[in-house]
Image (cartoon, rainbow, N blue to C red; front, side, top):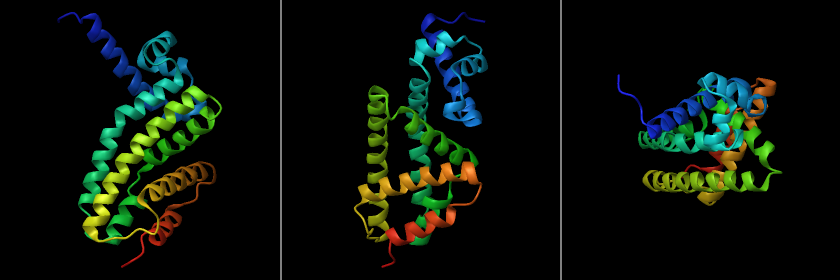
Length: 194
């Protein structure tokens, strides 16, 4: 078996920490996750997390950045299969699985935890703006294809739906009641039938 170069070892450590971070954040939430637990799950010391990501917040940002393309590709494919307004609303309101709902609740925790940390908050905001811009472009294309005229500018619709999704995910994590119907009804209002 060939010995890994230093660069290959660093890349391997990076990937192991990303995977462990995802698992621990999903299991414990952002606030409940400890750097030590993440490092141990990956088979490293906490120093590896700090060296590669600067801490828990940096690890979360790296995970979101690494997963953004996959998320957008999945959304693009699902939306591309829609044939009408109801199909599109179903994709936007109901396609989330249990893991996606947990991850949304973790994202809400990150927002709360980093709001008073200007440096991290700015990084989170920049990441969110990039993601939102990509979703806006994707939805604009789909609305034109389906002949839909949203009640709000698409940029505002993306912010509203994202904020509602985060709020509902947090509520569900505490109250265990479904919020799917709420999101569906809001989307029906935001995307009126033509």
